[in-house]
Image (cartoon, rainbow, N blue to C red; front, side):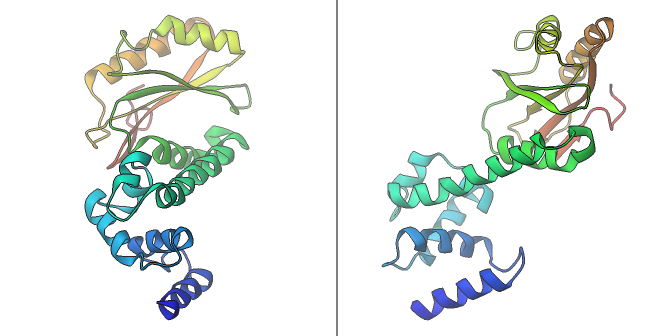
Length: 220
């Protein structure tokens, strides 16, 4: 077991992003928390149960702790990685203009939302330099006027001194393709913003299968 762990460590330190398989990433994280047991079978069982590395790291902490041979210490070893990934991605988004670092924004949103099992609506408010002022969670549920009110979104932008915004929500079904309601509410908010000088740059929909930009599709 010691030899195997040494080889894993060497591959991790000397290799690139693909140095370790997904189950080996989990195995390595668990062996730092559980140094006296073979964590490879646990890692493989987690991948089988949840389906992917991302799904394991984003699983509920209690569900992870209750998994056979896990416990709170092992669950915490996995959850801290997910926390670090979110913090890193969020910091990268905050440090540069959002429109000039679009991929960093998409990476941040996918890390934060692709795994969610409920539909969540967020508004990213930007200043004149397109720097992020506030990433606001405005509600859960389908994106319609019952969940997000165009006038309230624009009023909030004015209160914050924002000059632009980006709408974001996720599709728990996995497919990020926009619905008719997604398109309609986006255009209502964009129209309300135009009257008061607030630009709606985009509406991004996140799903496990990828993301969609309504602007890129010509729907704004």
